[in-house]
Length: 384
Image 1 (tube, rainbow, N blue to C red):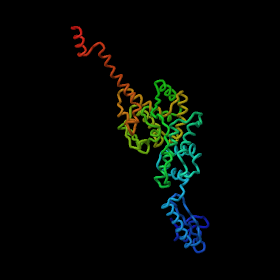
Image 2: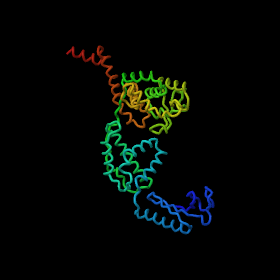
Image 3: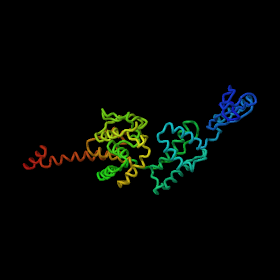
């Protein structure tokens, strides 16, 4: 709550003790105007410009009374969802790496229905309508949105409501609480087989943009996520100890990770060092962050005749290690940088399959040379 001087020329505010505005306008005598600005518990601001200080104090007292009434008797109207979304987005830009995804989801799939509504008027029926609409809507490619995409909308609306309650913008209930989000299996992997890897390598061998192919090779040989690769800087590469360090701001788990490198990954990094032009290990041709990589990856993937995501290169790395029979699930968890073993369980069947193959080696070993216990059994059968 405050009273300030308001310049009649540029309309900017100054302290009460000021005699001149930054624009040079006089703030003395009859030129003075006072502005009262009070923020109500609902989050909205009440402002009024008056000619005298005594009037400003009376207005301020009135605004204070209204604020107390709102707080004590809870008679205020809930804020509009647009007001809360605006403040949430400001917070998200400072605290979330995925704020652009939030903004895109809100603009494309949420605002059309909820915009202009007071938060206390948004009911579970509105949330269900949002989810149902998106489940039946088609993507720009002509396909239906997957359950995972629909759930992202649900999670964002729920998060915005919870955030507004924590920030005390809204004092009601979250309408998402009584809605069940769509279920989906996010454990599906789509690793490349030997033929797919060969096709991808063949295209990369003739691709002119070497920097793009180095990104793909490193992903295949290291199993790192796209964001982890593109944000990797030379400060975090240790050739002597053959490790890379992923800083918390660049990892999904938001934890510091120092991981060993295999020989293939080192070969890629050595080549990157030979053509180094900036602090990024995998920059674009100008040395800046490789923001246009996704478009190039799509062209390379299509040229190779593959229907895979870039993230499937990570699944390929993990699947080959798991099926080798030489890497246990806990070691694989650390190499992939998973925050919990549950995330690595999707590869458990490959590890179990490799173990079964190893166990079956005993059949070959003992086929023509039964162990002592079996020989004893055969001798007993002959005697009987």
